[in-house]
Image (cartoon, rainbow, N blue to C red; front, top):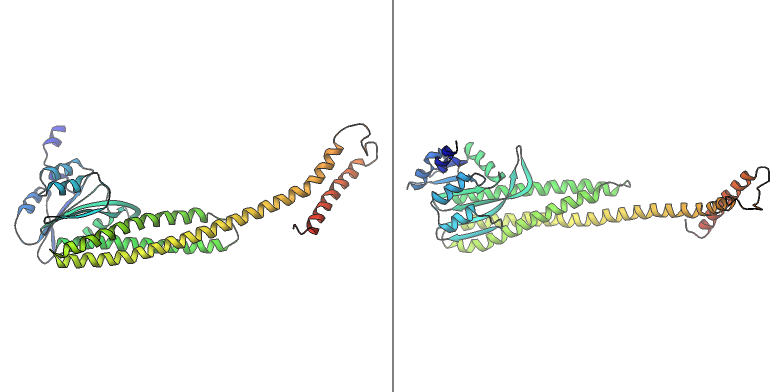
Length: 332
C-alpha cells in the first residue's frame, strides 16, 4: 500500500479541475488530464483547485504546476498574511474567505491562495472555503466565466456578499439585544454584545487589508489589463461599503455594551443598597440579642415572666427605630 501511494501521480490529489471555453462555458477535466490541459495552447482557460492538506497536491505544486518559484511559494507556503502581487504575467495572492461547513458557511475566516494568468487559475486552501464551493456549484449549474479575472471577481464578490449577510445577521442580533437592554430583568447582554463586537473587529481587519491590497493593485493592473483593473476597482468600492456597515455595527455594539454595563452597574448598586439597608436595620436587633445572650449575673429580665418576649419586642423596636431614622434622614 505504501509503494502504491509513493508511485501514484500527484495529480490524483487534485480536488477538481475545469476547462473554460472562449464563451465562458465549462467542462470538467479528469485529474489525469490536467497536466495536458495546462500545457495546451488553445482558447479559453483552465481552473485547478487544490487541497493543501493532501500531500499529493503539495507534490503537484512543487513538481508539475507550470508556475514560477515565487508563485509556488505563495500557493503552498505557510504564510497566512493577506497579500496580492503581480510578477511578470502572474497575479498571485492570499485572500480571506469563510470556512465552508457541512451545510452552510460559518463565521470563521480562513485563507484562499491563488495564482492566476491569462490562461489559467490555480486555487489552494487548507480548509474548505465558501466562495469557491459556491462558484463551483454555479459552474455546474451553467454559469459562465469567460476569463480567469471574471472568476476571481466572482470569488471576492461572493465573499463580500457573505460578509454583507453576516453584517445583517449581526444587526438583527443587536436589535434583539437592544430590546433586552430596555427591559428591567437582567440577562446575558454583555456576553452577546461582546461576541458580536469581536466578530465585527475580525471582519473589519480582513476587509481593511483587502481594500488596501486592491487599491494598490488597481493602478498596476491597469497597465496590462484595463478590464481587470476596472473589476478590481468595483470590488474595492463594494468592500468599502460593506466595511463601512461593519464599522457601524462595531460602533453600535460598543454603545450597547456601555449601556448594558451601565444597566448591570445600576442593578448591582440597587442590590447593594438594599443589602446595606437590611444590614443597618438588623444591626441594632443583633446588638440587643447579643446583650441578652451574655449569660452574666444581674442580666435584665432574667427572672421576669415573659422576659424573652420583652427582649424580642426590644429587638424589634430597635430595628424599627433604625428604619424610621433612615427614612427621616432620606437614606431610603
